Image (cartoon, rainbow, N blue to C red):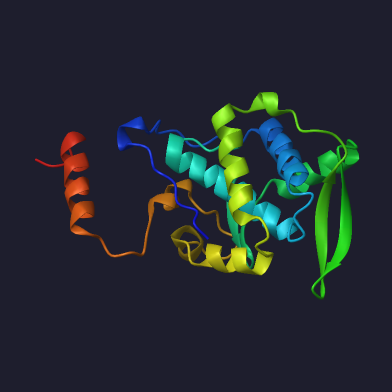
Length: 195
């Protein structure tokens, strides 16, 4: 899985906590479900991971997530805390239904949209990012995606049921290269962190 994205410069940080945008979250759930209708590996766990990657990569790229959802550490990887209430609202409003289907000995829960997502609430670059994530994860099962998220620093530093901070997207376990050290010095000097 190659899910790397360029990150924004530190001086682009807004310094504000992301605010949850429920309307964008609802429409993103619908968009992802619609785009993944033909992916046999798409279910609830995979939906959680696509939403997580979309918000965290947007935060890394642009300094703000797409939906501002709060993601917590769960046994099968990051999960948006708001998903259950939003899903129930979408069901009650007739925008989605849940279809359970057998999948390799498990029961897969698939969100099936009954209307198209309102893409007007997103920028073109937000939808492009989400669609790229969907394409990169196409056909990869939930267990493999969950295993991948378990190696991410954000999931590893959080305790069970704790929030995963958006800033964790910048953490890595890889050893620093000399280029990394030089870039850190350059940015630290630029930001006035070095005397």
